[in-house]
Image (cartoon, rainbow, N blue to C red; front, side, top):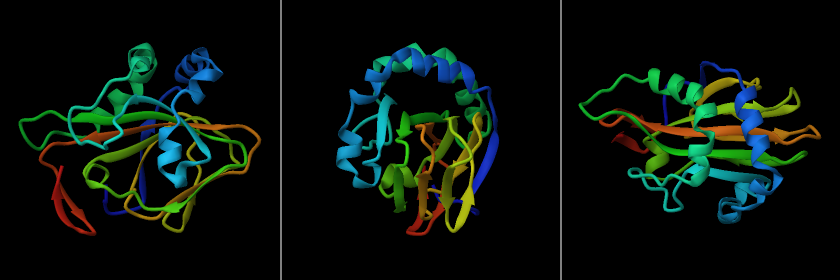
Length: 194
């Protein structure tokens, strides 16, 4: 979603419970779903565990994947923090339309791109750094950011952004897209409503 600025920090949570819960899924969990990195060349250096996700990029009625329930206790602090940051603008409650775990492989990069599509222009995109280190560079616009473990950031995904993992360990982020029904968004392509 486009907003005035490049990114903003919402707050932080303890990343350890979520990191431990992800580790408990086992290494094989990272290889089970490969369509996202196959469909989008920009994500070819990533691995994905879908939690609330649809391949058709729908904006309503998202599909819950089995691991969402298993990880829910560890996800709750981050999701509650995000929910609490957005007051409703209509009588409809806000909702998450996508939640995924994504791991950028050691030495991997996500090339510079802008997110497109109707739903991504109408939802707040959040990154929670679960496992990271100072050698991971996240650029939004022309500014380099380092999102420390536990920090939750909203990024302006309508601005060019890219990531470089210059380390020898995988970088794991939770990506959560939140919709505030009725919210007015002044997108570069024109005014839209969530």
